[in-house]
Length: 429
Length: 161
Image 1 (tube, rainbow over the protein chains, first blue to last red):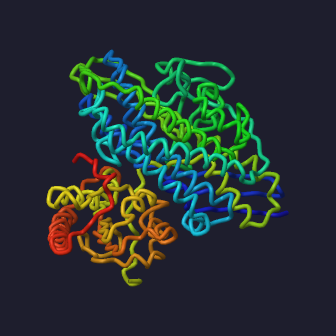
Image 2: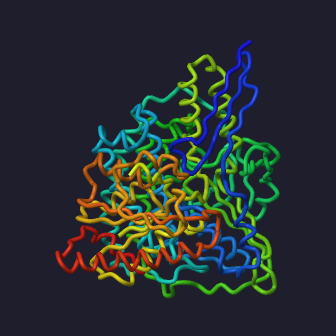
Image 3: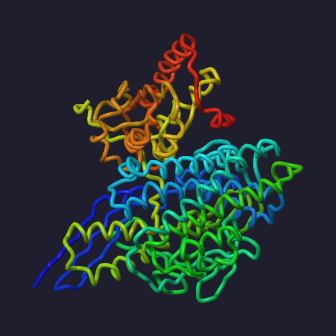
């Protein structure tokens, strides 16, 4: 009779905090819990009673990495309730802002969090010493994304320029020219990055994923689209509550989501890629092919390649938007409060992010529901872990623990709203 | 001048609020930036600078509002317990690996008390934020006026606030 326990308290290189517990008995996993310290649904409660135009700013504070995603899902949900459709140049500017966030977020994950797993480093910082050229490329990509967000969002973190119906201020065409120059270089860096990560040594793992992602008739869906499941079913975003149901699990403050009654579906880069490969820009599709990707990728370790392809796509499409940009007549279309319920979803870097708001007759938020990607993926990450380590329980403890960490990191889980303060030891000064 | 923090986590907003006060106090040629602590953002922001000043909330057990001056950037090991996976210590390590540390890096730590979600900034920390902004403002005006600091942040100057 043998017992084995793997306990990872505070997974490194995962945004925020998480812990994992795996227990095995006689070569069989008896318990597996991924515990994500996500704050309770504080923000949903906080939103009740606030004015209908406040959620974009308030929910942007939930995540320091993807505030634009929260703003876009919030805006679209409230605009839907109020019967407003934002289109034309204003929608293009929203796309551009969102591409900036994708470039920033994916660059952080690919270079500082994920690549060290494949090259045998404990951190991105250690990797930088020996892979300086790649890290310099990362900084250039990061800066390009950062500039997009700062220019359109008003500042680099927690953008303040977004409002219902559009923006407080829209850029002049000439303001976008230097961004385009930077993006052209970033696109080349992204192509080089995809070729680099495609050459990594990937564990031979395939999971039978059930994917969920938005699909748009003309775009690789990021800002909006129809929720689409990999077996082919779709449903309008207004019917999200009937299809996606969240449930509390006893060991985590995060909730697990079930899709049409079944848990363990996947959102995020692999899901988007599988459902929308044909919507990638021709350049991004060619880069994916050169990187050896098929139309669908079921190896979560290769998600680093998919994210690199998505950076290429984001740079490419951002350039297309800038090239075609015409200044809108007004920075925002009016959005007057209408009592009713609105639903909105967009593709945050980590996956589909759904918002629902009920507005009362006084224009106040009566009820709010936010379904973030990490809550949707948590059950599937546990399944990944189970399938990955069940046949490998005889590995040395340290090696098993490292493999578990990698399996979690594959899905870039974001534990929203973590604090950043330094845990300072004054005596060590 | 870079303020690091999270507006949604009580006293963790201290660094950001110092940055916002300083933006109105300093000559425009001194870059004032806000950061969530993303190491790449920090390194890209201070690259090429002669002097970078970073302000961040800290938790050391001292009285709330205590301002720790010129925390040494080399002593990164006590910071491994930071509740965020990546932060200032990682940025310093990354910058060191890439030879992108500013010539002088000064870190101010403002002792926080409450880091709960959407908690208000505690009064002692509010006072420390104002005092720190004024102290840094005086210090930077003196330095910038005396030596004519050149910043290398032209592309980051588009922040409209």
